[in-house]
Image (cartoon, rainbow, N blue to C red; front, side, top):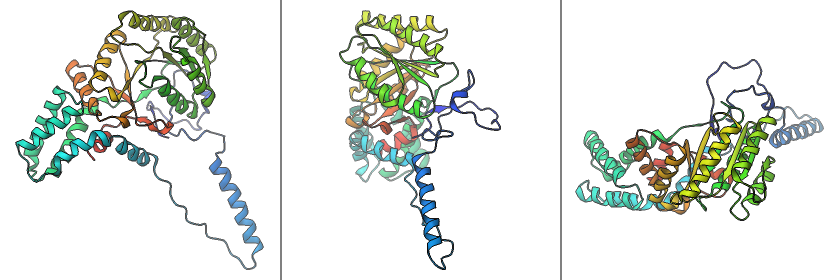
Length: 381
């Protein structure tokens, strides 16, 4: 597990306070999600038992000295494991682009093939043109002569284009921090909420979920299952008004001293204006329950939808004022280049909507923070 959230720079206290004692307004650090103060882990317990057994064996052996501890095989770094899954997930997107660089010459034909590959990956016309222009400039400056070197320069140019999208999700500037999650049906919204809740709860945050998706069949039950898995509470009503559920959840979160309240809203098509108005109503109602809330409005988009994902970002941002994105299912698509299209749109608007997390699978560890250089390198492996 990794650091999902940004921590404000502040002088370190003499002794770290337990999670329950976090002061009002303090930003919680979830840098070590698998370690909880005062709670021995299974690894430490196993180590203690091994140490006792080794001591007994040494005492029972005549003339035995102090036994040298057996060398331990270091575990694979978590981020390295994530990178392997990311490369595998982006193989469909990167494969067609990488084939462009198998030739022996850097000429107009290479750039034309690269342009076609980028467009097929749903990078978008504007982002593709910017990438090609920047790539030609870098090739000229570096005096590259091998197509393989051009691929590395393209990775650098893509990483620089995506850099504005990288931003940490801040938890703790308000208590509770209220997160409103929206998206179309099938994007992986509720599953992403469950994964995020698991990470937050493991990091010591007290989380409360609001089952404000009262329209989709079994949506409430799905969120309750995630709540049971992560041992967090959920506020739900059978067929109730989603705005009322959200209001009750935020009010309950304040009364119970929760760190985070996450509202799961119903899937909405941006073309259905009356349904989008329901989301605005939820947003306004949350603000009545707590001034300044929701503090984060996250849109979950399916990476398989390509340019349609960009259209969703535009529509939901216009309606709600998005603060961040979660891009899911990048492992099942050849359209992972849509992140470049989103970055270019943000640059043209002068207002970037950051990508907080990307997902490449169904497992808990398959939802991780977005790192532009990692993404670019995995895409152009």
